[in-house]
Image 1 (cartoon, rainbow, N blue to C red):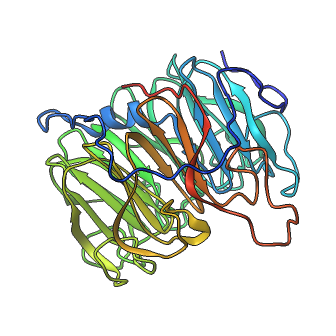
Image 2 (image 1 turned 120 degrees about the vertical axis):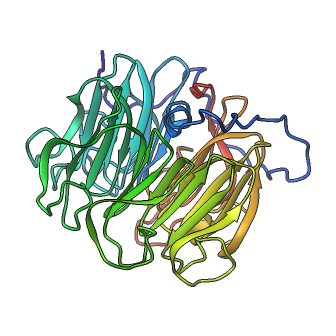
Length: 403
């Protein structure tokens, strides 16, 4: 049963905070092999279910430890940390704070968060201006509230949410100005509506959605001003359209989409203003472009992309604002650049990133303006630029890996 707790500093052994010098990621050590699952029967829902134990929101962070506890820290202006109160943007929560128990997955956007508990219930909290909490209102909530049951996967977008139930049905709610819910209209929905069946996984961008079907086909819909739907046009679609086959997983954020095929190849398309496509250019792409091979997992941020290869190395490219790529610089990267090794999961959103290594440790880097790095600090003067961390640093231990 979920329960909310008031913010407090963590002193338990489970969340040992290491405020230490940044550790330079090794790019030369030989990592333990993390085996890519066989292509046959490798569906997106298997990957998502075991990787959704960390999430970065706009200026907030979330992690599930192996005892099922959900921890959150950072910006809390709309109650998106779920600790029972909201706070001014200049008074964030600087250390990991326990939110719920019995959690198996978490997802977050700029100011809204969702979590799935072991009984299959989906909980939501935070901003609700477009009905993205799915509770029939537009009232913000600072504590988690149940939205629906029998949920396998969830993806939380800036204004809309998509959930895959255990029977493979896809449900949507929230903002729908560009048809991103996929119901053929542009009407916002304050409660979940059924969109499709036989869905393995789904991902939400700012105003578009992608879904991988159980047969491996990839479908997209919603806003398409930068070609993020991948169908060769820039015309919006209010209903799902088929884009490619043999897909294992897709991830989207902002106005760009990334897809991982069953053969381990990574394909991206859409906006490319900061090199987030990874093809060495800043030219937007309206159809899928092949970027890498031997990829096991992907996470698309608003203007950057993260990929884990089958050997456990983490690669990043695109915008490096606030040093969010984690390569020790603030320079944009137009092709994939190795950041870290021994990685099993990664989450990217706006200006910070988070990863789980194979020992269960959680590493985080990028902007810290709102305490989203969880190291007990933030910019002293809120009117000054944030002080980012350029290399990944450890923030907690014993993350739930669901491997």
